[in-house]
Structures are given as C-alpha cells and as structure tokens.
Image (cartoon, rainbow, N blue to C red; front, side):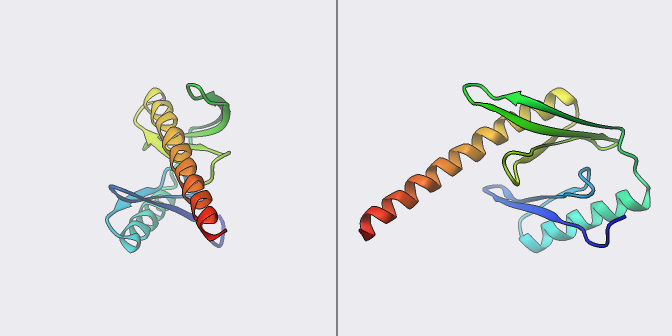
Length: 131
C-alpha cells in the first residue's frame, strides 16, 4: 500500500470530477474542488477498508473515430469500469459496463482534444497580438 495517494481532478462545466490514481475505482464528483477531493478520498478509503479487489486490468488501443489510436487502461472492479487514456493525462471516465466505459472514454478523448485545440488557438492568437 502506498504512503501517498494521487488524485487527478478535472474542472468541468458540470463541476469537479476526480479519481485516485492508485485506487482507480475511487472517484468523486462535487461543485467545489475541496468537495471533490473529499469525495475521492472517502471513496478511496472505503475501497481500501473493504479490501476491494480489482477483477481485471486491461490495456488496449482505441481508435476514436477519425483520430489516431490511443492507449487505454480499463479497470474492472465491483464498482464497474474505470477507464483512462494513458496518452492524455487526466482523461478518464467510467461506466457500468465495458461497452459504456469505452463509449464514455471515446467522448472524453474527443472533448479533451477539442479543448486542447481551443487552448492552442487562443494561445496562438495571444502571441500574434503581443508580436
């Protein structure tokens, strides 16, 4: 068991969503960063106390429509399926079934890349204004 636990927390239009990297089945949602961190910590603690066993860890590549293949890691536990794109830090999702998790991570990848393109475009425009 690690001495420290890492949370990845993302600010979305719906609120903050987070996951514990060392206990991938432990995730949380809240309207505030502090609330999300508390929810993820509580979920991780509960999973560790219950000695939750991870049933399956699967690594594969996923071809999102019109995009290059991305490395995906899916963890099946008693909570369902936690799924993350290892190529895009912080890009993760979940689902009750394997099919739902894969569908959700495809959408998360597309959203992630859209935001990255928007941020790159805004940054380029700011550089042009400065020059």
